[in-house]
Image 1: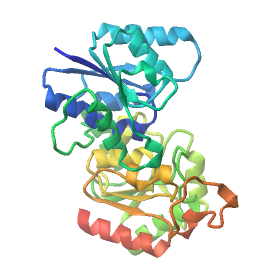
Image 2 (image 1 turned 180 degrees about the vertical axis):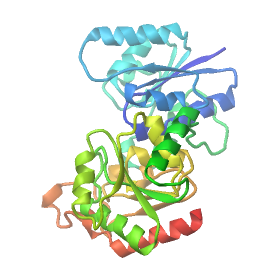
Image 3 (image 1 turned 90 degrees about the vertical axis):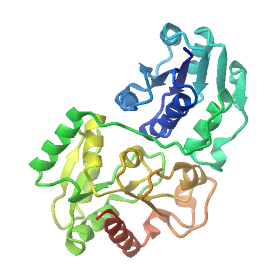
Length: 341
């Protein structure tokens, strides 16, 4: 039985868009054993993917060399023949070498790329393809992939479904009877300001007669509070669900998920919830690379040209995200709700 180690140790959205790699491996070799190396934050998500057999949690922060040897030891226990480094980091690449993995795939353009004997020559920063395609491209360096679409899949456990039903009932909401507005982000991409999300939430409730649930992650209560300072009514909110899969359970019950380009947006698409997403014109944040993968997705961007990088207040279009027309947003929400009805 061939054993694969797949490493993706960064954020929620990054991991979600890496999950199809596991399915592609199983599709080409049903007897293969797939282990993902992930951040402790995303560990439960990886375990909820039906194509992943095992998970190794690994925290990138910290400088102790013993952490690399411990990771190598954990890898070696799985007796892997193939290592796939989807997020290029020196520590994970070195751990694969120390673990004795004979076939190692990763990017060709890092100072440590000599640690990969199956280098992949692509620059992701140009955002010429979707992140999911980049991930499958690294797998293709070691395995012939079947020619069919692969999309992220997460199976929500019953305990998280139960939490979602209870949380919604406590707020007077029913499944598919509400819209989620998620104003926060990890700040890796420009987002609408809380005041704009407040206008969207007010319009959905007043004009479309659909209830809104505002969701937020850990340390994002201040964003909800700022949003509320601009709202006509206090938001019905869920701040920091007990677990990430509990949040996924709630998202899966919504008619529509509205947010910037953020990890929970990808969670929504992975469980089939339609999305309406705000993207900035910065090339590295482009929807070409990061748009959600679901069948019912809408993207709204400010009416400015794509830029190679954000220069903040020095830009003549700053803040470009505030150039998004609120009327365009409401029309998009209405159209999305008609599809999901």
